[in-house]
Amino acid sequence: MIDPFLLPERILSKIHFEPNTGCWLWGGAWTSNHPKYGGYGCVGWNHKVTSAHKVIYEFFNGPVPVGLELDHLCRTRPCCNPRHLEAVTHKINSQRGETGKCSLPATHCPKGHEYIDANVYWHRDYPECKVCTRAAQAGYHGRLPEDKRIARNLAIKNRYHAKKAKLNE
Picture 1 (cartoon, helix red, strand yellow):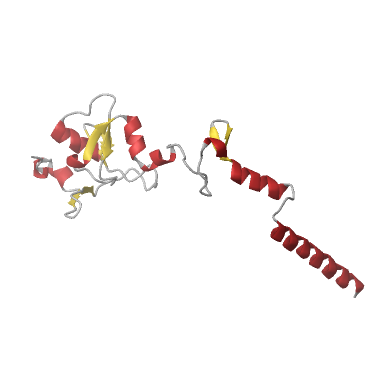
Picture 2 (cartoon, one colour; picture 1 turned 180 degrees about the vertical axis):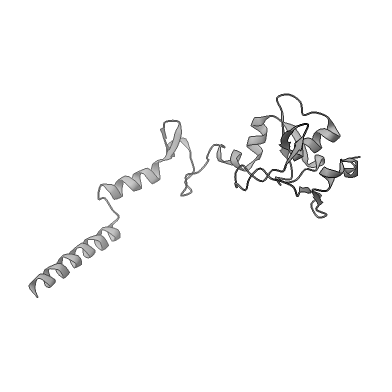
């Protein structure tokens, strides 16, 4: 049983208990407001500034094992509830977090075409969609679909006649 009231008063006074989620939200100093790296509580402990969640985790569970780091299972950075923290490797922590989602291999191109062998060019270890690449090349080389080509030519023709009429005035 983890009793938060066993914590030293100077730490306990900075914790706000959220009844709906069970998070212990840190109300003291934070690392920064940066959306990607900030939002973690920090506290002076043993003559140095360290993470509030780490201090509280170690108070109840002992030191974090070497080679591991704490992962917020609740995905709430200011939370310092030791039940919401798990000691994991950096790789696992990165994969679980928001930034880890970016490093997962893509299964579809940005326009929704599936990356399958018949539909992929490999460019420096990154997949490129053949459908999108062909469409981009067709537009670049002037091979537009019929309706777009007609519209483009009509716009060019109208601009030409407008300039010619302006010169003849």
